[in-house]
Length: 306
Ligand code: G1P
Image 1 (tube, rainbow, N blue to C red):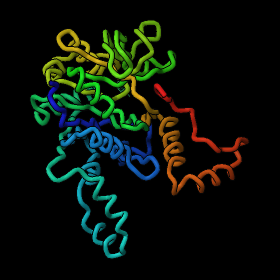
Image 2: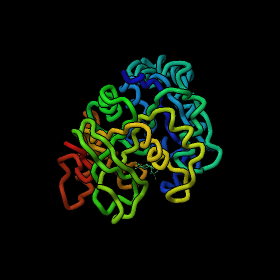
Image 3: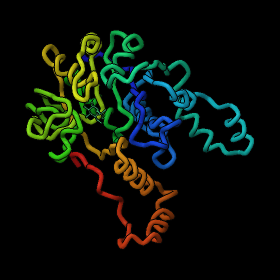
C-alpha cells in the first residue's frame, strides 16, 4: 500500500515581479481572490486532501504569511465583543492547528527545484505534496484530493496536468502521456519550458505534485536548467528512471494567478460564484457598459476535462 501523504510544501519565496508595485512589500501569495489570499486557497485544498503538516518555503518580505497562519487575539476579541461569531468561526476554521505549520527560507532565488530542496529536513523521508499557490483550482473535489485517489492506486509520484494551447507550452513544464485513463495514466517523459516544436504534447504540469523523498537527493546535485534556474521538472525527469510517475488530468477549472489575466479572471469567476456578491457584482459590471451584458461566469479561463 502507498505510504500516506501527510505533509505539503508551499514554495512562497518568489519575488512576484509581474505584480509590481503591489508586490513591493506584499507577498504575491497574499494577493486576494475576492477576500481570501491565494495561499489560503492552496492550504484549503491541501487540508481537504488530508494534509496535516504545512511547510512554507519563504523568503525576505514574506513574514506576513506566517502572521496569516497565526491567531490574532486582538482581532478575535473584538469580533467576539461585537457578536460577529460567523466571521470568528471562519477565521478559526481557516487555521491549521498548533504545531502543524513550518517555515523555512530560501536564501537565494535559485529556482523552484532549489526552493523545494530547502524543505528537505522538515519533510524528511516521507512522500509529500507540492502545491504552487500561483495556480488556483476551482473544482470539486480539489485537485490534490483527486490526485490522492490516483496515488492510493498507483503509489509512486503523481502530477496534475491539463491541456494548454500549443502557443503556451513554452511557459510551462510539459509531459508525454502513456497508457491509462485521465484519472491516472503513465507519464513517459517531461521537459521544462520546451520550444513549441520540441514539446512532447500540450499537457502542462499544473503546479500540483505528489513526490517521493528520493527527489531531494537529486535536487541537491541538480544543474541549472531552463531560465538558468534549478528546475524540479529536471530532477523529476531523472527520478522517472527509477520510480513510476502518473498523470491525473483533473476535473475542474484552473487560473494561473501568476499572470494578470488569470488573476483577474479568477476574481470574476469566484465573485460570480458567491451568493452574497453575485447579484450586486453583476449589476455593477453591467453599469460599466462594456458593450456586452455579463450574465454568465467568464469562460476565458481554462476548463480542464469538464
Ligand atoms: C513552474 C514549473 C512548471 C509548471 C508551472 C505551473 O513554472 O516549473 O513546470 O508548469 O510552475 O505554474 P514557473 O511558473 O515557476 O515558471
